Length: 167
Image 1 (tube, rainbow, N blue to C red):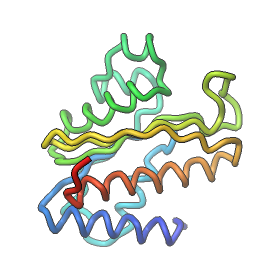
Image 2: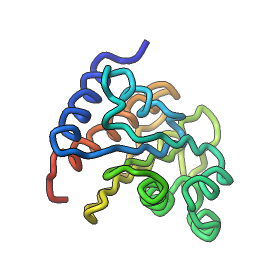
Image 3: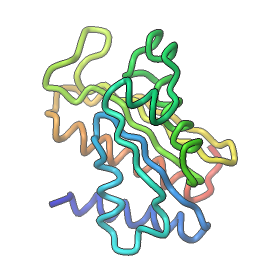
């Protein structure tokens, strides 16, 4: 059902977070809850995963995560600024200590010259103030592969924060 390598990555994130007493939230757009699904594939994840937000529409980003209309109007749903706002909104609207957010264009349509298919922005934030964000341009590798690679990147960012690394 789910990629075994990604489930192994999810298990590692959960173990790191559990060892430090951290809770996790996810805020997902183009991955549609895939990161939360990977985390919940691991038995016992309920003591670490607080919640997952699937905010596919702009209205959902605004209503559920308090992403400002001005951010969406100025930068678009697929932007570094929106990913950062989503991660911070997930922290604000949950009991989590760390959160990750993903927004992008998985395709096959919907891209433009400025924002092509395969463009993904990810952001992770911790209550202690640590922040990290990344832009990935996966290219036209197919919707499924873009989503899987985005989830892998999100898990790596969660692991970075869960491990206590300074970013």
